[in-house]
Image (cartoon, rainbow, N blue to C red; front, side, top):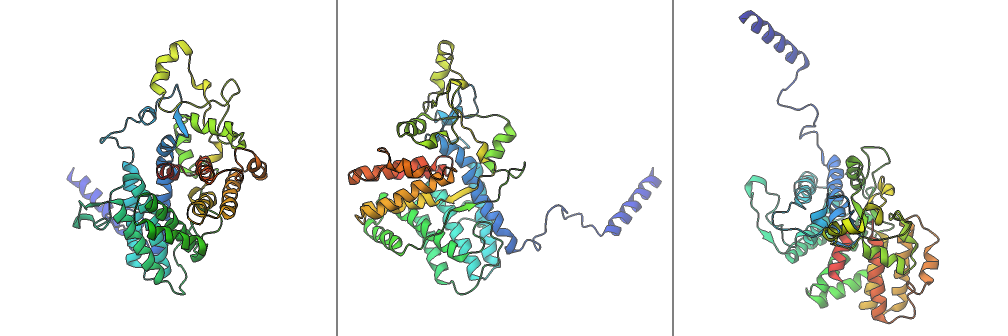
Length: 427
């Protein structure tokens, strides 16, 4: 036995010395020295996009009254019935990915890179990440966050403090910009600093409007909003994380999760179905399938338990309601800020603060047109905007503002559900 052990030990020594293998390193993962700042930004961008476009897309879809649980499915019963309490782990994964994933990666990049353009892009992403965090949790770790074992229990600060903090970071990072170009890999903006600046200004606009309607230094932020809109230095097109394909394992994360489960839990909710129907809106057919009788029927929000009670007498089944048809989502980008959302915000500012109905109308119609284009319905927006339900003219200022809000809600469907939920609360 001792002879066998000696021979095996000798063979092991020869093998290890022959391939010069360090058994403390995992060959499937790069070392810390190999992970350069240039390769880390896509990971941070992906982490933010993933939480926005997957788990948050689901629960905010319920909260925004876009989704309901199909009658015969059960995965989201608690969510559909809003059975949520302190022990619910609804957002735990999102919290971990934003802090331990995105924000930690951004911190490391900024520690390793002195390039002002790189640091500016990272700062814009910090603003985006913390805006999402505040919209979900209100209070959040900020000034003591990301210290690791040096401070494993950072204090939680109110959302106003967090957002003021990152906005101050953004102003300082922007003032440090010079002529340097980005050196980081950047699938979100393709290293275009003009687009990063435009995204930053759009995030400022989004947050300033939160402040105004939250009663935070209203006069100051109203003027800031008016100045931003007057400067009109926003991004072109959409800000979207566009890396997905129709190939398996390269899907949009929300679609990929459904594909893996091989089941469809989602029915269209009654409010979005009825709003589209009442307005004779052609977007009704986008992602909403007719029921087994050939009609569009939305599931009543929060009605799942009652439907179960009634099922024996009414026979209420999946086929009675319109399911969410999600095939188009396979390669859909995750939208950080759509052209549609930006234009609706501009329309709101023109109405509320500038008293300029003409510019408000132009922005409103641009928002609707952009959303139709997003859904592959180019050419249908013009006729829709002339309909009684959607036309801007002939309405009071209050009615026009309500129209802007409602059309923005209609446009966020299957695009950015978290922002829909946040804007419902703001407006």
